[in-house]
Length: 536
Ligand code: KIV
Ligand code: ZN
Image (cartoon, rainbow, N blue to C red):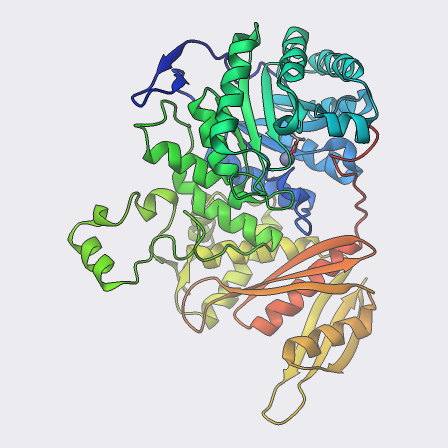
């Protein structure tokens, strides 16, 4: 692990409308999609999925990727380690409670990172200290200082968070933050853990901390806002105007409960309003939409159509007056260009006669690298099948196709061999499915309320997974009736949740693939501890 990528804050100036702001010009984007985002019920990701998202985040040029909570489970440890070993152009961070065992595990997971950060935290609000930790404030300070010193044995890049800072007492916050800076913390993250803050007041909190803590110029101030009152982005931006120089956020605003501040909204707000923000990010905003789509397809969390920046309607003009205005002069109704955040015209990129090299090159341009020749061959043969069924193949189709190829490579225990579904007016739909279970072909038949229902029942008649279907969603990747359908299935069993994805021009086949993909994840061991629980 190398030195921190961050630099210390200093020098107040006054901006045009009179608020004190910091004149540093860099805003550090700390993405926690793979950690806090993963804490959304149902959003858990496999190691390979985390690596794919991390690659997309690196391409987006986020400064720090929080890859997980290594002590949480062997699976999460391996995921953080794999991300740390893959990513070169972003700092990779691991979360750790203020406990030796957590910090050591995080240090181990990050050992091979080109640039690694340990993020350690302990709660500081009266309610958390008394009721959850059952510790006195003195004990909390002592443990925090000890944790930061221990983390510094692994890396110079140590971040400290006083959990539930939004409800903590200001005097106590000043005391603990001063102590952890002395102990070696280089980033101080102020979390509004329960989404309680209001923009004006949260901005003031950041300013007060920076003014009152004597050694505050030795650390970067960061914020981490939850969206329980729908104010996570507003609170983060207010903090930036009062000197915060790191924002923790997630793609599509994923995260615990109502989620975290949405990365795309933060980044575009500071970009569109340089008159109010004196700092800028280093992000390549054209990667925002591809990244958003990838996270949505892997987690199965759809993007609402009216979601800012990445929703399907974000740049659509319905009313005649708006359309007329945009045609005459785009800026009458648009404050940013769709292509600047990665929306592309549905360009036909490849067709039936395209060769393997063209296929590989186009996917490279989309940021997809194949781990092996076999993976490339599997994806290319799917591409040829698709080109037979679908006249025009767009970037979005290629991305879905690759997801599907990756899924097939990991489906070790249960595979779809063939299926036949009958759907007829006035008749009950019937499905016949043949699966390969550890090398042996087994057939199942069932009827159901619809073709998808019949298919899932036929699969269950063979594997008897004992899972419950929690979510089923279909998304057309491009327009047209020959579009690839991308299906997400969420299954639950004994409190564990797994998402599966499948893509095909036939949505019943895509559904079967998604169901089988989710079932396969249940066959992999995956026990994890929640970061905000446990014995700290
Ligand atoms: O919301 C929170 O307080 C957190 C901390 C671990 C930073 O996620
Ligand atoms: Zn959080």
